[in-house]
Structures are given as C-alpha cells and as structure tokens.
Image 1: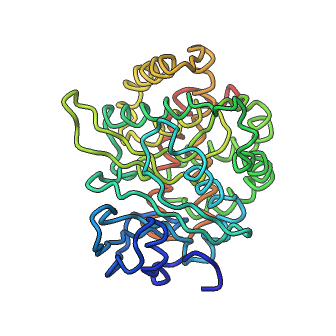
Image 2: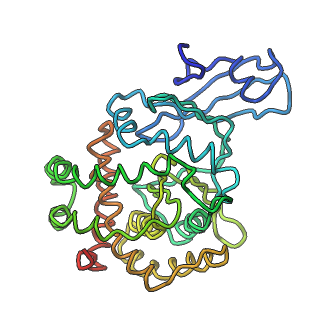
Image 3: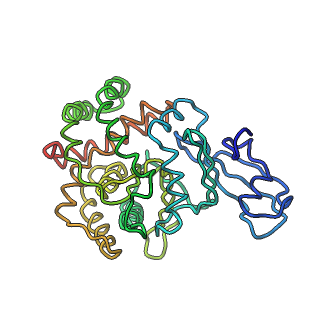
Length: 354
C-alpha cells in the first residue's frame, strides 16, 4: 500500500489488523470478508477473524471508500467521509448515543481515502426504507435522536470539531445547485412520483433562497440522514420498544434537532394516515427525553421548525439521486424518500412557512 491504511477489503492485512487491536504479532491466523449493508456512498464489509488469542472481537465491520467513482466524487464534494470519520474518532465513544463502537478511524488529506473499523452489531438488522416502520420502531430511533441532540462537548463549544463546520459550505452548495439538480430529478422520476409531488418540488425550488434564509439556527449535532436504512434495530424488549443503533454518519454536522425528527418521521411511515396519527405523540416523547437529558426545547417553536423541516427528506432525495451510483433499488428508495415527506409537507402546509 502507498498509504498507511487499507481502503479496500483485499488490502486488509493480518499484521495491520493486529496493530489496530493491539494484538500479539502473528496471533491473527486468518481473515475473511463479505459485503454487508446497502449503502451507496461507502462500501461496507464484515470481517471474520481467526484469532489465536481470545481477547479480540471475532468479527468487525469495515467501511471503505465506494468503488464507484461517482459516489466517491460526491463524498469528496460534501466532505461525507470526513464527517463520518470525525464522528467516530471524536464523539461516538462519549456521546451517549447508541452507535457502533469505533476501533479505528483514519482519513487521508484528500478526504477520498479512509479506514473505519467498527463493532459488528449483528444480530441487529437494518431498517427497510421501502417497507417503512411502525410507531414503536420510529420511537426507538427518536430515543437516540434525543440523546444526540442533547449532547454537548465537555469544553462547551463545538468549534474544536472542524468537521462539523462543513455544513455551512454544503448549505451554500445546495442553494446554488438545487435548481439544476431538480431539472435532472424531475424527468427521471416522472412516472415514479405523483404529479403533485413533482409540482411541490418545483415550487420549493422556486422559493429555495427564502427557505434557506429562514433556516432555524443550528443548536446541536444533527445526524442529517436519519432514515430507516441508516438505523439498525434489535428485537423488541419487554416494553415493546426495540433498540435503535444509529449508523452511517456521513452527513452529521451542526443543525437543528427538528431536521432529524422531521426527516425520520416523514420518510418512515409508508401509510400517511399512520404518520398523521403518530407524529405529535412521537414528537412529545422526543421532547420529553431531551428535557430529561438537560436540553429542553420550546414545544411550539419546535413544532414550527418541524413543519418547515418536512422538506428535508425530499431535498436529500433530489440531491442524493443525482450524485450517487444509480441502481434500481436506489431509484425506488429515493422515490419513497421524496413522496412520503412531500405528502407530509402538503399536510402541514409547510410552504406557508417559506
């Protein structure tokens, strides 16, 4: 390797893995891997280890740069790899958020090459964006969202976490690029999305400067892509609530908690009637947990921010659909990501706040 860390599964050498786990040289007799997950920006693999020592994990998950050049280019443009590595390197261990434990997090200067080794969360299972989820599953994810949004650095300032500051540049890019991205998105998804959804997108694009100008002030670390495909779930506990494990931190940055909450609720319910019935109780539970963790939010102001943030999933769908490798499942997923929050925005009259 020309660098000090591997960026593809075939580059993982037993000696390097032994160093990561502070193992005795020669104690890793074998290493095998298999693909895992459905991510479109990174490639993920489960590694199985044949240790001669008992103190090391039998498996781990490695995230590697995508083999697809389009996806890697998008990651560099939006600093996606830098944000995820930053989260696991600097925050994950003491965040109080349920996420995979990091074993190693390292990134190159050009932000296209990195090595990220994480704890294997099996038998937890990935959520299904296309199928959607019930209220208990969404509540489990919001339980972790509240912990994330309540977390504060020990120093009291987020300024030392430079990777969080990418959000300002990304917002500026979106302000300039969304009109042209939507011109590509609209014809591609005609036939996959109802006309009213595409019409709403066109109206949002026309008002996008005003939408960005009225954005609520950042208050916390926001996950930025909090949807079912980016969450692992365990079997329900005695209280009926599964444990949610948040993964795919490539879009975490400074933001407002309402963005994650609206994104999750808006994209998770396949039936809009379920979402209409559940959203206010779910928000109340989320706010109650935030308050218990010492980060209360005004319910009325949060509701307004939630209504405005109903577009979050739609905007992500427009942007991501154009910037990552195109697949059949990807198009179906992006259609669901656009249609469900678009219906929520229509129900909540979110354009009236723009």
